[in-house]
Length: 235
Image (tube, one colour):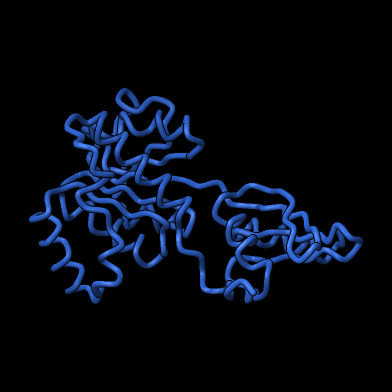
């Protein structure tokens, strides 16, 4: 790999941006495509699939073979609320390969006894997220049912373009949430991105079942996410 390409790839990794290194198996040069770069032609859909799946492999287009080496940032989940749902979600998310951070200013809930070996932050979301900003490879889960705590996290996630934003509460509760977000300047195109009531509709009733529905919703959103505008139609 050329030094200039390696430096560009490392810069993309550091910025937590998805990228694919294209190598012409016919002996041509390699090049780097970072999510957001303009790409057109017959390889565009192949590149899009690699950016979503994170899987590397060989692609053949017009009798020409390429090795597509995908580099995706490790996805993470930020949970607003040290509640029962979070206690079930954290270990399941870890099994699925996500790093998880739990944020809750209520020190009666955010205790090491309830969340052993967890990245637990007992601060207000706006303060905690100023230290560790959200990004496109972060899922935001808001489950306190308290607007004072949930809303700052949701607003930060909308601004950061998080691949998933989910919030606990009924449709009536969510309608009031949308009204508050509208007052903050967010339109339907943005608030429609919020999964509320949170999780896939599987009839979940218990905290553990809601955690399962939420994690499934997160995985679906990651693997089917809308890519940054860059890929032209496959030629």
